[in-house]
Length: 396
Ligand SMILES: Cc1ncc(COP(=O)(O)O)c(C=O)c1O
Image (tube, rainbow, N blue to C red):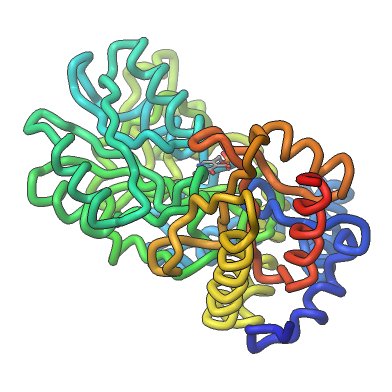
């Protein structure tokens, strides 16, 4: 099979040495870092850890550059970006910050990751919001109609994934946000599975908040993420925690005096209000390096490659006896995540055997009970051949 992309897939694969040992089909959980990005990462860690405070200026500069890089990537302003540890952080911060009453409905879907469910379950336990659900369909029109049926005049917030981590279905987030805007309902979009796969522009999506990470499709450092807070929504979110860096004016013992509680400080007037204290500034240097690496390959080429590869995977899996494909077919309604089940196998058992017997990294999903593979910018036809060979051998 020839490569459907306009960069040379064998060249990008040679920058990912793990591919010589395993079939890597799980970028949807964590990505693998290309060697040039890893070199930048190691250099940044070395500089900061060796230099300590002497290197902090450079580390902080790298950190701010990452903020600007993320902002550019998703069409936001740097002041609208809080750098976090992961996508979950962003959801948890909004769940802990928004002033909601115990009966205020928070509408979400039946395919959300625990990253969405747990922070809102905790918020509900603490008397802030009440979760309600609508089911995702492979057809975005149907998803929109189910969403509209579930929407209530009292709904205060809609929180949905841009791409379902279960089936890879793309949700009609622009239409959902437009409906919410008309009704004065806030929106939080979980972009953990979309950023790095296809263009994500928060202005076009029209959400109030969005969250994502650097360690999946951007193939950046583990433990990096972001929370987007639309500038005019900042005053709605009062962080649950504060520390030096998040308060304005900056900390000064004389100013805070004997009574810090009554001193006239407030949260800084940007999304930086969620960040405080000493942080892993150096990790974010590699987040910029990861985005720049993909910039250089070309985002259109990356998307074209993932669309083509996931299409080839879907076609081949759907044609395989005993295999059921659960992901939508059209690229516009789907993503590089391809979910399928095999007759007679639970997702858990199939996932375990694919890894243990065939060194194929993928993930089990629960809705439906199936296995999910990720077609990334480096996925090649050889990965599909190995997957099909393993499935055939397991079915025998
Ligand atoms: C849709 C979705 N949201 C959130 C997460 C959690 O991401 P993180 O580990 O960055 O918190 C995942 C991870 O698989 C996901 O698929």
